[in-house]
Image (cartoon, rainbow, N blue to C red):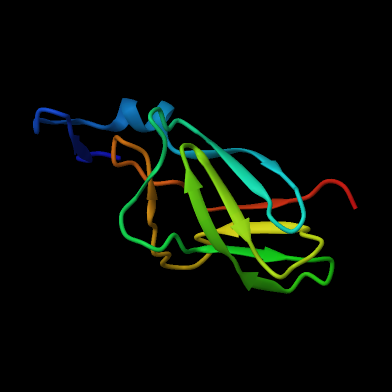
Length: 121
């Protein structure tokens, strides 16, 4: 991450290496409530923000393993997914070669792409 910097609240750029190590927006947990799983994220004091609406980039797969795009609603550090999949088994966010990231924390650091599987059948 040599040369990478972020702007602080006063507009002054600062080295982001230490900030990135502990403040990357990551998935904390998933409540696999069917058909609307709820995702909770880490490292987003004050909640998450969108770079643009609507919140996209989420996909859900059922037992057949076929992913379908899901719509999402944001509230604080939680995202609720909406999909016709009745029995969600896997969730992806920004799972692409060049994803369009829209989910950030208040430090303007993006939520990292992930894939997660429901441990229960």
